[in-house]
Length: 71
View: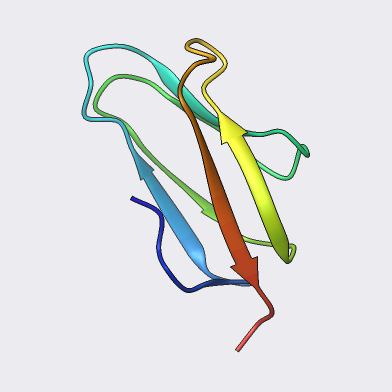
C-alpha cells in the first residue's frame, strides 16, 4: 500500500512478493521500477503531485501516489 504522507525526497520501496515479474511505472515518466519475482526496488520521489502508475506487464494493475512538498 502507498504511504498516506509521501513527500519529495522520501524513498519508496516496491516489493514484488509474486512469482511473476511486475513493474511500477509512472505514467508521467518520473519512475519505472522493474521487479523480478521476489525483488525489491527503491526509488526516491522527486516531484510533487498525483502520480498515476501501472504495471507494464499487467496494464490492469494500477495505482496513484500523492506526493507532497518536502518536509
